[in-house]
Image 1 (cartoon, helix red, strand yellow):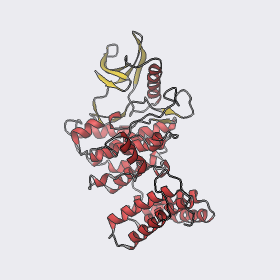
Image 2 (cartoon, one colour; image 1 turned 180 degrees about the vertical axis):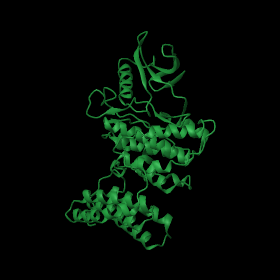
Image 3 (cartoon, one colour; image 1 turned 30 degrees about the horizontal axis):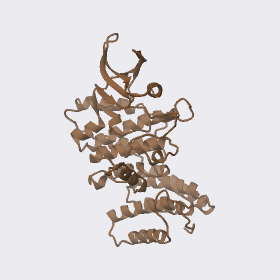
Image 4 (spheres, helix red, strand yellow; image 1 turned 180 degrees about the horizontal axis):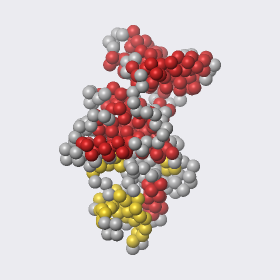
Length: 415
């Protein structure tokens, strides 16, 4: 028997249909009726999310006065166990796992569901290479009062180190909250350790809220740049700094998942794993753009008009709209030409300055520091762009600005 959250989990056999299943009971140690309500809520939410990356729910009932739910049995191991047994996980499999989780999140987005507890122990890798997202006990469906609150008091719950800053602070959550959990999970797969791991809960939370977000490449230097940048962006403190959509995340991960070496003792033969993986990601909703590489000649003609529109918006004082366009262009340039592309750098610098104009100085400082970190890695410390960034950061902090990501500021909008 395994204990998981508020339930007791037992392997069992469905004698009617002759199949192995998992039966989860409400723990006898938890108070009713709150535990019963939450337990039933989890089963209904799991059943409502129809996707091959989520365990099927076969039955819901009572036995000797105790509610139970019957789930599909997954033949595999959790990602937490995968990391413990196989670290470092091959890059191709990190990307493949992330792409499959992204496809589940896309399906969740269609019904407004937010998981709110994505972490390695809540995701399983089947022996065929298929991913299953587990434990929807903290999930919510926005706009549906039946699933919007977990407890009578509505308090925020989650796992420190993996739950997004907005969860920690009791702020509203949306699909970008799950992107943070995905980023933390990918970081764990890449490095073999959590992205935030303080001595105490308070120090871990402080690391999460004070930033900057960590980069996997600092612990695993051979991490592909696209994967390193994606995880870093997914772990942004402000949800507005994370990718705009789950489809964008999938688009980055899918091409990186093509090289998946065998993992003896975990997966069956590679051919079956590839076939299973293709079947899973083939269910991605239509809003996902094709994952084939687009030539710059096909996309470049749209860059200049969009850049001019962003310049116009900025000149008209529409700083947030301009920043949104510049950010999108920067992501496109980085995808096509790499993170060291000077145009992408300039566009991201414009984004940071737009946030200064909006009075969002902590956010601007985080973005400027990220640009500086990238330039220091790519160029000499005395490079003009490195020196220029240091000077710009010093000008902001030198005016008495508290650079804490959540602190208000009174700095003027002179950029």
